[in-house]
Image 1: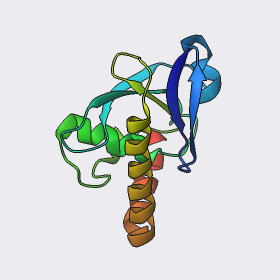
Image 2: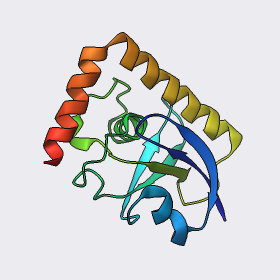
Image 3: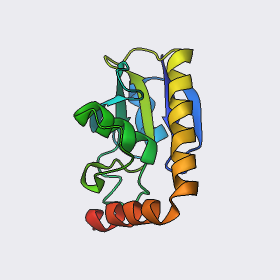
Image 4: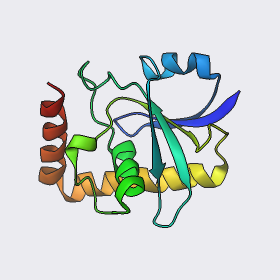
Length: 139
């Protein structure tokens, strides 16, 4: 069993123990997407597992996963700058090599969730434009 953190596009999240073969049930589709993510500047690298077909199936964008993906790829902590690199649907966060996540990692993801909530509340128009761009790019 692997201990991971399942984060939904609506920002609900929970720690889950799962077998990789069962991850598709949690994600609602095949686990055919994997990217490196970072939750804090100069932070550790983790893996985000997701269903690459979720966007084409109309799934909502996952702002926490998208933010962490951008941080890992560019080192840019600016919020949601690139809708073309967004991840849609639920995401499982695990260690970089598929190992368990620890409580410190869960706390980092909690911080990212709070940051997204604050951004969505403080910048509703920017968030809505980012969301719409992600959904339009999937069509």
